[in-house]
Every structure is written in C-alpha cells, then in structure tokens.
Length: 267
Image (cartoon, rainbow, N blue to C red; front, top):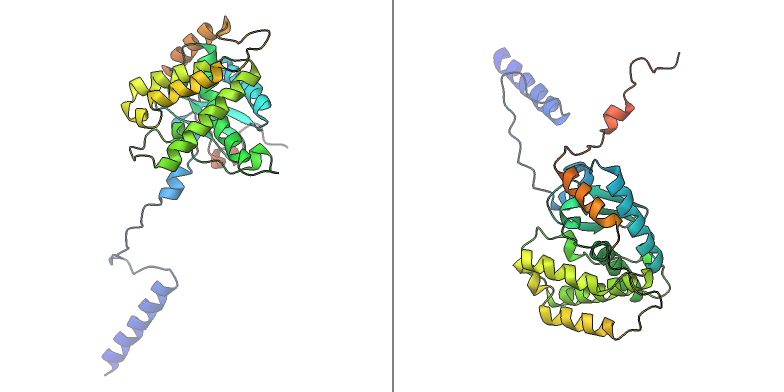
C-alpha cells in the first residue's frame, strides 16, 4: 500500500511542476503543438532588417533629396528614406513616414524623372487616400497598400484595388508636376515594369496608362519646363549598381547596442 501512495505523490508533484512551467523530469520529452505561422508579423518585418541597407550613402542621400522635394509638393511627411540592398522590387511608405525602397526597383529608372516617379507613387497613395478623408492631413490618412509594395504577391488584384492604383498613379503624376518633374516619366517607367513583370499589365493596362498620359499632357506646362534628367543621375545610377554588388549594411541588434564596448566604459 505504501508503494502505491508514494507513486501517487510523485504523480501529483510531476503534474504540479508541469503546470508551473517547470517542464517534465530529465529523460522525458514534452510534446508541443507547432505554432501557426503569423503572417501579420511577417508582413510587418522591417525591410532594412531583412535585406540590409545600401552601403553607398551618397545614393541614399540623393534618393532622400528627391523624396523630400516630392513630399513637399505632395503635402506628405516623409521622415526618412531607407534604400535597401536587394534585387527585389518594392516601395513601402510606413504610417510613421519612413519610406523603404529597394535598390532593385530604383535600378529600373532610366532618368531622374523616372526615378522621381517611382518615389512619388507611394506618396500618391497617401495623398489620394487623404482626398477621401477631408480635414485630415495627408500623412495622417490610412493609405491602401501600394502595388509596388507587394510585387512578390501573385494574387490578382480586385477591381477596387486596381482603381486605387490608377488613382494613386494620377495623384503621383500631379505630385511630379508640382515638383517640376515630367509626369509622363512615371508612365514610361511603369511601362518598363510591366514589360519585365507581365502580371503588372493587369494592374496598369496600356489603355489606362495612355489615358493618364494624355490627360496630363493637356495640362499647361510650367514656364521653366519639366525636369527630364540631370547630370547627377547617371553617376548615381552607376554607383547604385556598383553598391548592389557589395555587402549590405546590417542594423546592429538591440542586444549589441546595449552591450558596453570594452575600453569605453566610464570610470
């Protein structure tokens, strides 16, 4: 009888230990269910943490200057531009005003005006969204997801999403015109993208792009004309291509930043 009482006491102690999170005794394996993949957390991943930053700071500063001029014309607050080192294509404007744009996407631009168009497109989404929310500043409005931010997705867009892309493209062209860049350059670079990625033709049909270009052509041209290209762009484009061949700059982890550096500890 005493043997059975001892076994019962051990069973109770084992159960209490597991419930307190202490785990099973040595030699016994605890079976755990596989956690479900959190797609929300994956989509919220910092692109620069994942892909690394472009090492050439002059290229990053160049993209920042262009974006600042476009953001001023759009009335949208862009706090910082991050150029990531990856051949993937994306441009993601976060709610806090940070713009993450891949070097692979920027490489598709053939002129400075086309580069401005790629940078203006996510701003166009923010501005177009603000137009549907009167009384709110452009940077406070919730923007639909730009197709340039989800180019890795093969899921077909719904009709409202396609209409949102056309509205954002129209808004981006207006931003470019107000900033002094040729609005037609955005249509030109979108045609380049659709030639490289046929699935984008369903988002930007040639007929829609042609209508947008014709509508913008009917607008009066500024007295000083439009910027099509610059002497700076070819050099920056060459540096961009060269930087893509070099290792990316990875952010230091919070643990590493918090760790004191030997020799620099205050006495």
